[in-house]
Image 1 (cartoon, rainbow, N blue to C red):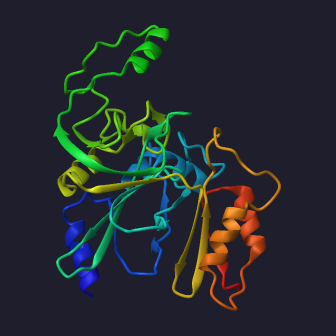
Image 2 (image 1 turned 90 degrees about the vertical axis):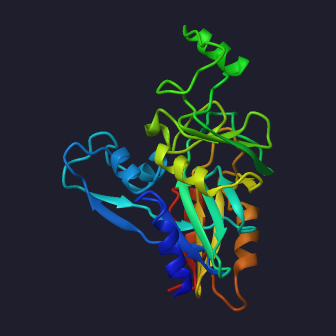
Image 3 (image 1 turned 90 degrees about the horizontal axis):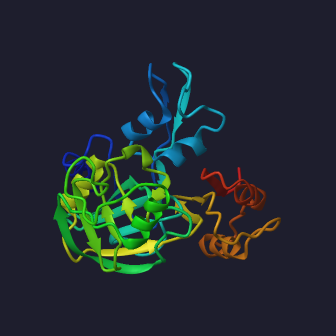
Length: 300
């Protein structure tokens, strides 16, 4: 009950759609799957933003549904259920493969709470390396100094970028920015919110305007940041074991036609003694790479 009250209390300070959940040691599955009917003039991006989801998450959950002109009244799958990344639950965890940020906090009673937001991330070959860093400074209404590579890229497209972009509606950093210990890597807002859940940035990590404003208020300088780039997650919930395999990135090497050894090892590590794993389901999840969370043990 204390965890639930803490989660409700923190949720009151968050945007209405923000996903905030109490955490329990050993429990990796949070949230629940939802459905919603398409309203007039809705796109999947409108529905995604209402539920603090990104573009790719919505498209993967609704294959065959036109993301820009879904039929009014159609039932849309809303994937507001998440497997928490493996590893320490503290500070910020950036999951590049799922384009999602997880923020862990401890309440006054020591209970844990996680808040998660979708991300816009770097285009091909412009992702940060996996590793650990910290928030080293914060700024509201940040000025953007385009790096030479971006200015050269835009020049090749016929656009001249000035050396500095002041705060305002034309600033791609949005209203708030968290500067990390990795040079030129920021977590910031955006003036193009429909790019959340896509690979559209020059390398930084973008959040919806309402999400970065909330995160900025909650994250102090010095907060640890862990960046992971793992295309699959294995986690438990009660007696059940779950697997989520993301589509991955074109620049990553993939193993075709066989079950990757790292997935087998991760499942074996989480598997309990005498527990039967549905390896056919594991193989399907790896082959499809749909981002769906599937139960792989115990078998029905």
